[in-house]
Each structure stands twice: as structure tokens, then as C-alpha cells.
Image 1 (tube, rainbow, N blue to C red):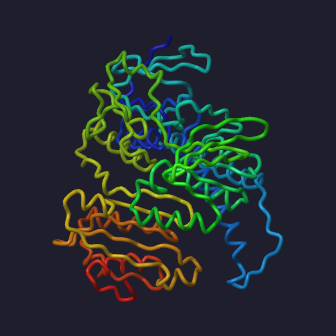
Image 2: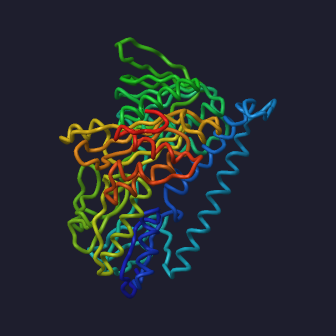
Image 3: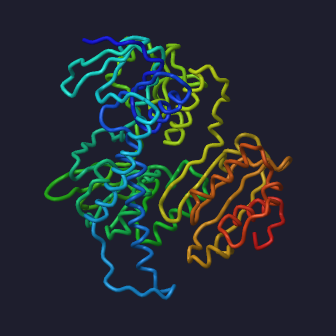
Length: 469
């Protein structure tokens, strides 16, 4: 068992939290090593964000092709080839993977492929694929960034063939004729849109009263309407009683909102009921790192119960988004380097859903704002009154702005519509700078752009929208 000179920072996990933390730590002059069990980039690059967006682009192009007549673009016999779509996805992932490895090399970050665990408060043990210890690395500071994995339901056997998770869903070799998706969070909704565009018969089942149940009620309503319009069957307030596999598919028994029962015979079942942090086999209890129900317990600067050990990203469970993990990683690297950095304002970090129409949200929902005691005013503006959206033929959705009635402080913005995932960034900046709805409404936006819908929603909150309510 080899021992080495001490690293300033050792990171377990090379996903969007781990590799970003490593790059920033190296930039700050810290000797840094990343231990990654497979490939740098993590779930985000290899089983999540990037491959799903590549396939969603294929879905969008299928939808564009089918609707081209209104623009004078006539096409016949448009077909979808899953093999070619998967090849494009793999090419995208491969290119970005090489780029990520290049980032680490360029910044002199050492990369070790193996399974990392804690050998003590200031040491990382690396095992090979057979579980044999290859090396032990002393580290003054350790960052745990092991991410998360798909969650299952009690009693439900995920076989990877008929009953699958998003991991297998991104590796399909053919479009299933029919599929039931359990869970209408962002993963379930994105897959429902994508597979429906590819030609599958899609049913989505959600236990809670609405699709995207954590989003503003307006968002849920608009997305459910959009899914139904595309032919997706949506059951909310519905409970999956059993999934029985047999032959070449599965039989799904469901109790619907009116307590009636329905049986769905489908080719595949996709389980999309959330993710859980990866904390097993890291040596956490032996070292004294505490783990709670959501993940590893950390303070405001991501420090665990052991001062030399930090945790970031999905393994913490605070806000499991790739960009949050990256931001946490930068904050920890700066903290280790001795720099004064502000705590992250999680309520001002946008979240996105990449179906069509897209969803972008930041801050409080209207319900949350009222429950927090705010007297609120609401501004709304529909894309059907936006010139650029009409020209694009993408008139679905709207911008909803939630503001404090007394001071005009922007408490939240929720967008359903074209390019919502890009438009929401402006709203996050406005909230971070503590802008009011009046200030956002008076900023001159270029015409014609989709961003004018944000401006008009801000004006609507003050009662002076120019082009409609």
C-alpha cells in the first residue's frame, strides 16, 4: 500500500461538482487530485444532462419537421432513426468528455481512476475494480462529490430491460411502441416529451396532484396541457399498485384519482421518482461524517461534521442540480484557499426543464410567497402576444412574475415557453441584484426578442403592460 506526499485538496468524484472544484482549487495554487470511479464529467455528462439534451434536440427536430408546412417547408416521409440519434448523442458526450479531461490536464490536476473512500479525516484510499487497495493519498482537505443515482419504489424490481431508469432510457436501441413513466418530475416530463416525439405511446403517472409538482401551479397547468396536446396520457393523483413483467412487456396496475382502477399493458416502464445520494462504501461512519435523510450533513460553506472534509452536489441533497454542484465546488475551493466568499443564495438559483415548451424558474412560487407572509402582486405575459414567438410559431406558454406588493421586490419568476431555460437567467440576475419589477420593466429590451415577454410581465405586475396583460 503506497503512501504519497500530501495533496492540498483531494476530491472523490469527478462530476460537475468535483471537476469544477478541482479546476478552481488548482487555479488558486492548491495541489489537487481527483479520484473518479469511471469517467470525469459524472452522471451529468454521461447519464444525465448532456446526453438527454442531445436526444431532446432530436425530438425537437422531429417536431419541427412535422410542423414545417406553416412555414412553407414541406416534407414527406419524415422518419426517426434511433441509431443515428444515439450516435449523435455519443459524439457529443465523447467530445465534452475529452474537453473535461483536457481542462484537468491544463490546470495540472491529477486524475486517478478508481473507487475513492475515506482512509481518515485527511486521507483518501483508492481501490481498483476488484476492490484491492492501490494507493492511499494524504490530503489536507477532502471534498466528497459522489453525486446521486436513480431512486426506485419499494417492491419494484428494476431489471434494466423492461423496467428501466433514466440511465437505460438514454441507451435505448429502439423506440418502444408503448411506455409508462412513473413520476412527473423533470426527468419524467422530459422523457415523456422526447419519446412521444419519437413515436412512442406514452402514459405518465404522478402520485401528486400535478405534473412538475414542485413548480408554480401555472407551470404545472401549462406543461400538462402541452403534454396532452402532443398525445401523452397524463394521470395525476394516481398510484401505481403493481408492475408485473412477462413476455415482452409489463402490466401496470394503477389506482386513479377517482379511486377507479386501470391496467396498462406496455412494452417498457420508466421509473422516474427522483434520485438518492451515493453515500455507501465511502467510509463515512468510521471517520465521523454524519449522514441525514437527504444526504451528507453540511454547513453553509459545505463543511461536514469533520472540519477537513467537505461535501458538495447531489450527495448533499440540498438542491440536486449540476450547476448548483459546480457553484458549491467553487465556493469550497475558495474557502479552502482562505478567500472570503459569500454563501450561496439557493433561492436565487434557476431550475430548468427541457421539454417543449421549456420551463425556467427562479425564486418563490406564488403559493410559497403567500405562505411566507408576503402581500404579492402578479405580472403575467403570454407568448402569443410576443412578436418573436409568433414569428417562430412557438406561442405556447407565458412569463409569470411574483413581486412583493409593497416594495416591488421580485420574489420569483416562472417561465413556460420558447427558450425559457435561457430567459430565466436574466431573472436570476435581477433577483440577485435586488431589482424591483419596476426596474426590470423599464430596462429596454431589443425588439423583436423573446426577452420582451419578461419585460412585459414585469410591467404587468405594476399594471402597465403595453402589449397585453
